[in-house]
Image 1 (cartoon, one colour):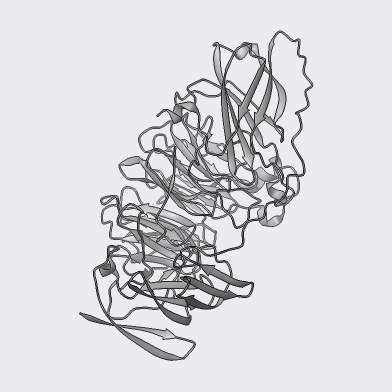
Image 2 (image 1 turned 120 degrees about the vertical axis):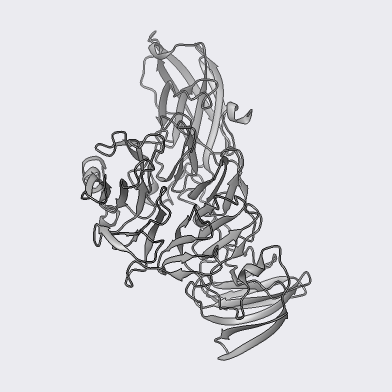
Length: 592
């Protein structure tokens, strides 16, 4: 069968036509076939929702392109904006009890509801308020919490009651946050998430901004308390409750990785083994976690994105591996898994939507219906007996590719490319693609999956850690005195970090049980050092109730995220040395 492909080639202002035989592709190219190949398209995806009754129905909230729905698993998208004037959406969420009921909102939209899967919409409150996030009570879907710049709103019955501001964020900052407060920081943003505990709807977790940590209510939103993550400045963004075990909670942080609680939020451990640190801006942290989801029916399997790549775990977060490179955007903002066919996974990125049929090993681009890009140049290249076309488009993402042989749609090939591209060329003798940009030449030797972006240059360590000052009484019999030394390649220097991230202390010391955190216990004692690797601590004897413990250490490292170390310790020990490394885990997690 022959298929006609047509697209607009701006540089020559003519229509170029190709005739090609259609072949079956392992990436389900038949899903994308059409009589006319559309130009490259893109949208910044903020949130994905898959209809659990009919998983071929998918909704996406985009930043700048509007609200979309697909009725065929992403093959095509149609706009379903709540109002023609709204384009920046942050929320698209499905009622957990009624899949025909959808809630949506975004920048200055107020909160909208559809009771017919997006065919029509009604404003249900907070007219013109920016809706950053919405959480629905699974035990009572008429009870909603939402995050707005000014704080958290609650409605216990959306049909009969008014919205009430139950957490005044700006008041909290004024009363609790010391230092200067730039006006643009006096509000929540699309990064802050809120989650109602499915095991106890009175328990609500809320992400934080520059105050760090997270907020929590245990009385249904009437009162709120602020919590730190091991006493170190870490901004909680996404929050995920385990679907069957009420003790397990996950928090993704803004540039400091993923943390898991085994005791329902009483304490946290870092779980980023296998992830690689971001390389575009090395001085604010290594892993910005977003879009974390469970595989339905198997919470050991999870997907998430960071600002370097996208990751999967099959052991509940103890180790992570990189998803297939055909997910060609380095940062998926949102993931969703088909509830019936769990190998079908959607990834929403800042260049559009991707779909995998094999649990994330391979991906296709599914952007038909999103705003089209203006093509500037196209070249044809044969790679491993397969014919490809590469396109340069106006703006960003700048480079696209499609397989002519396998009849695929255009997919962005702009990994870590954060500038406009003037032209693309291919040198067959070296297998090298060459981009010309305003900053110079950028190349790729793997077909455009990775580009030769400038290497990261880290600052030298100029403020070497010294011993923590000690002001206690070493002879006090009521205190257990321990000299601690931490060994490892630690980068504390924050001189080049944005001042908002210059927030010591950077070291957390915790006295825990030998089986922590797997036994669900909480730390017996904790302390923080500003940026020291050596010092003396004292622990009150009255809190000691066993002979053997473990000293657990986490360090914030500005190049490699969180460094972890531990050592078993017995009551009465006077000296302990602990090695800290990037991919360490507490011993009980290593043994599972």
